[in-house]
Length: 184
Image (cartoon, rainbow, N blue to C red; front, side, top):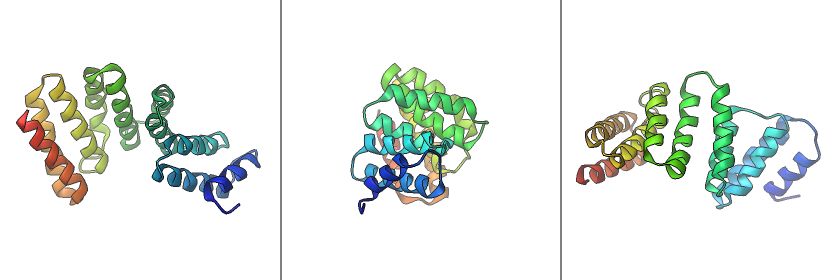
């Protein structure tokens, strides 16, 4: 089979345990599916890899994000909560918490999302893209629950970290959000 997604599915269906080539093919196919705008197919491919024994936290976090993008927030939340229970405090758990906060924001509101972000932000490595993303998300939810001063403090932290990181896309997003939050 020439198409990478079909090839990966055939490999996965033809094996009973994870072999590195099959798991790698499933990861690549999931990325391709996501790029073409098919997050549900991407999540299914990652779930195949997970079920074959390629059960790694990063893969579960990506699968959860794709399930959410594909319209299945319940499955996404379940995956993230189970993954977070298995993780030690640190960068990876902070990344999972950031994705969970997005889901919670849509399902339960800004307050619970703020609680998740505030609880797990200290686990993110300061100056990392995930720390900056979490600070931006936290600033957004804080302004929406009336904590304006805290919101501006967090977005300013995000801008400083993004400037230090030197990643133009992230810096542009942080600066744009800061303008909006200052206006609000």
